[in-house]
Image (cartoon, rainbow, N blue to C red; front, top):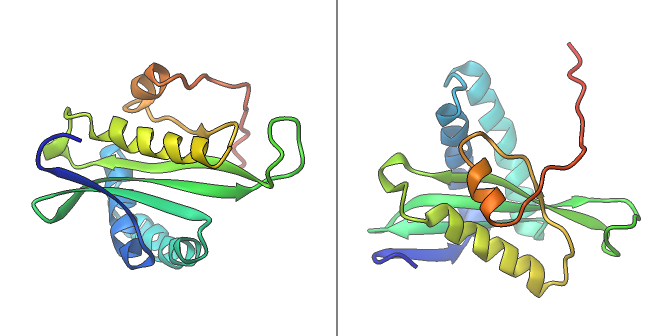
Length: 155
C-alpha cells in the first residue's frame, strides 16, 4: 500500500460514503450534478445498504489522514446456471473512484487487486465490469478483455 494510505473493507455504515463516491465518479465522467443525480443517489442508498448488510455488495475503501479518498465495490449479481461458473452469481465490479487529489498513486489498482484477490479466494472464475474511458487502460493491464456484450438503448 502506498505510504500513508490504508485499505479496509466497507461496512453497512459506509453506505452513504459509497453513494457519495458513486456520485463523484459520475460527475467526473461528465454527468451533471443535478436533480437527476440527486434522485439516483437517493434511490441507490437503500439498495446499497441492503446489499452491504446481506453481503451481496462488498466495498473496499482507501483512507488517507482519516478520510476516505478512494473506493470500489463488488456486486454479486444473481446469475443463471451457465457454462462460465457453477455459482449462482456473477461478480461485477462497480463504483471504482479515486479523489482527484489522490490519483496517480496506484490506488485504483490496489482496490482492483483486493477485489480480484477476494474473488480468487472464493473460487470465482470470472469478474465483470463496464469500463469508463478513464479506467479502461488499468483494466486492460490487469487482464480484462472486451466481450461481445451488446446494448440497445430504448428511448
